[in-house]
Amino acid sequence: KAGVTQTPRYLIKTRGQQVTLSCSPISGHRSVSWYQQTPGQGLQFLFEYFSETQRNKGNFPGRFSGRQFSNSRSEMNVSTLELGDSALYLCASSPGTSVSRETQYFGPGTRLLVL
Amino acid sequence: GQQVMQIPQYQHVQEGEDFTTYCNSSTTLSNIQWYKQRPGGHPVFLIQLVKSGEVKKQKRLTFQFGEAKKNSSLHITATQTTDVGTYFCAGRGAGNNRKLIWGLGTSLAVNP
View 1: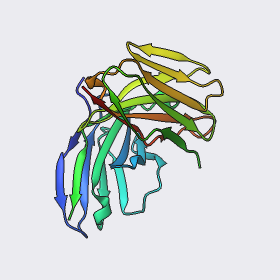
View 2: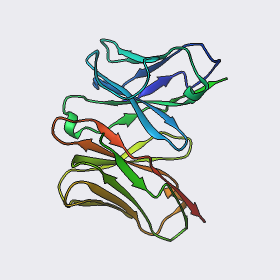
View 3: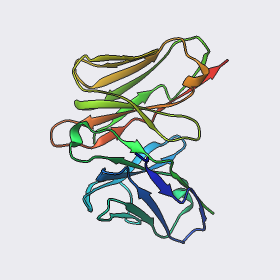
View 4: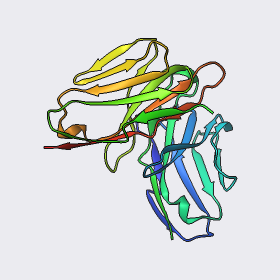
């Protein structure tokens, strides 16, 4: 099976702009989670989508939003970018049907730099 | 809210020395997972522990889950340069809280 793919891999934006990142999960996986990773801050959970519905949400401002399509592909959007949004954004997929025991399969990430 | 503390944040060892990272949760977990992220890479799943007191081994790696299911450890025997990376634990809440709570990771550097 092909792994989780994320596009684009690298992105440079300026403050105030918005950005959309895309994630295609492993075939058959219906859950997609998004994380922000910055040095020293570990993995910060943004949100999880399952069957086109947001199932869990982290503590990020409303500028961060996401959605999931019927084919399980997911996008996340960040509006009004700030310098502090510079980070590696990771997407992870899992089957989604047995939440209590599932593990996460991560994509390579999108590295966003905000100038 | 629920937290998972992971220590140490950094560890520098000579090749051949042992290494241990610890995770402690503020609440009881249903399970705990460990991931490894190589420099420039993405987290890769290593193992999941579910039972109280569980111990699992993968070659030189030994994973333990505490009796109270609130702490866990990863021990690497005789480190190699291929062990370099950041090791994360992630605890799954018990009861109705099924969120995966991540530790901040332990970055391991190995001197050849």
